[in-house]
Image (cartoon, rainbow, N blue to C red; front, side, top):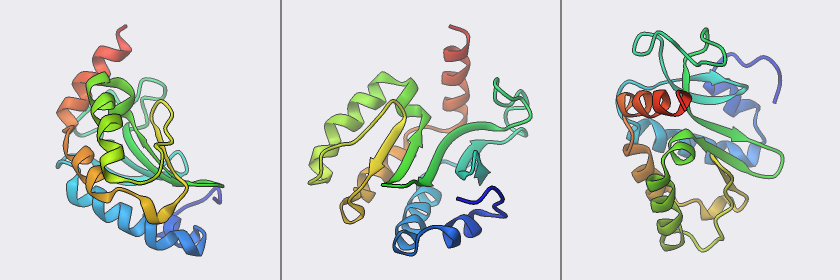
Length: 151
C-alpha cells in the first residue's frame, strides 16, 4: 500500500483488483453492523474504525493525537486481514468467536491475537463477522481499554 492514502475509497481502489470487491463487501458489513459512535478513516495505513476524540478525548495512549483504534481492515500480501481489538482484550468474546467460526466457514481459522486472516476470499463468514461487529459499543470499548491499560 502506498504511504499516502486520501480516503477509504482510495485504499480500496489502490488494492489488488481481485480484492476490491471483498474489501467493499467487508466495509459494508462493518459499517452496517458496527454500533453508532465509531468513525471510519485511514489509520496505520489501513481502513480503520476508531473512537473519535469527541467521545474519548484522551485518544490512544501510545499517541494521544490518534483516536482510539478498535478495528482495522487491510489487504496484505497473502490475505485480507481484520484486526479486532475486542477479540484481543476480551477472552469471552475471543472464545465465542473461535467456537462459532467452524459453524460458518469451511476453512480453518487463521488467527493471531487480534488478527483474523482470510486467505480464501470466497470463504469469508460475513454473517459471523456481522454478529461480531455488533457486540461492542464505543462505550464498551473505552471501558475495556481503560481496564487493560491500567494493568
